[in-house]
Image (tube, rainbow, N blue to C red; front, side, top):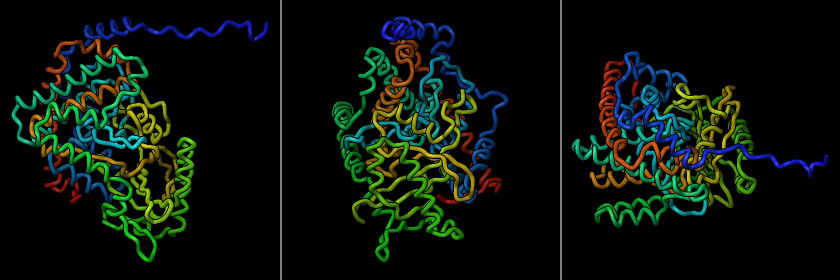
Length: 473
């Protein structure tokens, strides 16, 4: 019988929207929404310092004191660096059984202004080092607790903090209900852009808040490779070079004096060429039109301090056409010990795949590579632009109303990211139209902020006693 007479393959049966909603409501029977208020560390909880020390053992030794120094500065800075600690705590909390692609570190400073490939400003999640599929509640709880930690630092009252968290979680819940009623493509194209931010500001912020947003939008547009070049590089004897600022920025020739510059540049050139194959063909052609001129190791963030992060200075048309790329080491997600392993054996690819899935639009130079390092060890990296219109909030300058509105935008953004990968209909049905989940997370966030403050104090005491090293960062 010819191929033309064979019956077409039937697609696998899919659950209907009604069946998916029923599954979400059924999950409430197993784990009531009020159960998410619970947080009581288990008796065998691994000490936070042990978790941090285990991470530090795999990092650049001379940068570990900088990491601890940054984390001792405040409970919020500790929280930013302690995603692994919270991952262990979240693993013991109730979950609905419905999964989505997780950011893995969804604290409020990982939501920021970014440039879309079309050169529009959008608001989105920025950091995906810990991304992995898992319980959607974990990201929401990480965001909720971060709001309380930041609000406490500002001296907000308990009532104000509760209102901020409930507003953010309500925004997540109501946005998920809206996405549940939308078609797949409509969800995929949804985004929070500059126009939407201005609409929110016009209706919900006072004059001061609107002025702050205008400044943030304007400042974000200046943060590009040209601005990075003016801040991080100089031209000496006609050769552009990255300016040293040890230990935060160390050029390759100072970091590896025994390695000839030509050999180091060849190694990084190989990294760039191989990474380029993970880009689409048009972007690969764009990358090929640049030449590498300098490399340095750079300290970034709080939780990432000590990982191997390189900044690469490239030039295009001439010395007035710079491009700064960041090649950042990717290790196992902090969630990995608590969830199913990643389908990607390359940790850089894991980060990139998660970012592309959760973001409305991603950096045109986002890619990955596995390479044998100059020290002979094989490591995974992901690559992106160092700066591309990035704008970050300053929570310490926020009043309660401003943090409430910011939390609401974060909640909407996180819901959209989860709706792209998880069962948005089941999640929306689980959450329902009431505020039980919102109120539960307000309780959880306060309890977790208490735990975070105790862990921060433990680190401060360990540094003060000399048990752990610390250096200004």
